[in-house]
Length: 435
Image (cartoon, rainbow, N blue to C red):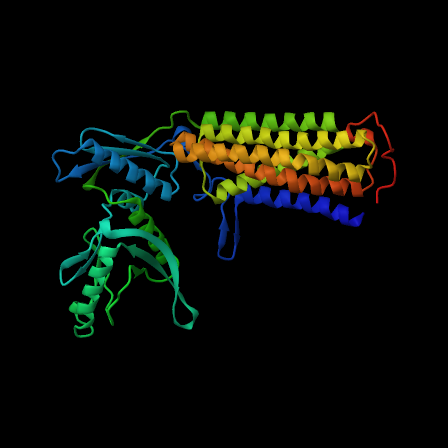
């Protein structure tokens, strides 16, 4: 019995810890878990808090084709996705202007520069380009081991076959030059900014290259940003920043407060219904739903989810699905009890029979959310993210935590069938002592 009391107490402790982390955040050594309101926690969308409007203008180009503008919009979308701005607006304003609206009041200079970068990577030797951006297949941030166990962030590049031959020829020529001279270097440029200039000790006959990014910390962030910038694509023309201003929320904070209040009222009513109708299992469901909410908020903080009004709708919908999973389990347990099984056997059998239905429902919903995320934009993606996370967490809490709690309650010898919503029995009595 002591073991079961410890199990129930542990669940309450986890709820308390997750609730604290979700609200205030937590720092453990080098790990930081953001809380609600933290700079790197949940990000309110444009509709709830407003944001910044950034306008870029093409320079040096007179006639811009529709396909080039569509390409710019697509590339901006990838770059914003990489920076976790899934909720944004990108529109063409005029023949040669692109306007981006992103949540938050103060976009930093690095983000503005990142968005406006042409991102044309090139390798040069003796002032001549040997590999251009169109020959780079992909880029990936990684760690490279150094002497004495140190690690250095790098960007791994992959070339096509034509670039491999040119790279081998250029490194062969550079390796033949006096060590330490400029002719002994391969210069790597992003647009017209030199980002690396390594010396060449021997010819390199490979379709890969490595760009070192300095020490840990900022070096890793620089490596990740560079890789994402390269993979997002090269802008077809140069852009310059012409305007940056603040835009107000389309709905405002009142909509957020109203939605949160509605969600809390709904959660309380659901808990009361479950307790009244299912009694002891209903109390278990109320505890599990509380754990579900705290775990979901913690995950959304860690992932810096862009929370919009449709995203809040996704959270509320996933709460309903979590409750539905509990109902499926409890109804199966009641059915097994009515058939004459002992309470422990009814709980085990009920979970076994309900598991496939819960998994199928959750997986199909998660697939639908995935399609919405990859095919949709802006608020649709926000709805998809919160729905996906909510359903994933509900599947875990229903199949793991609910079973753990119910088995602990049975272990405390709370075995009266009426406490589980069952008044009529057939077959063997469930009043037998639970092993």
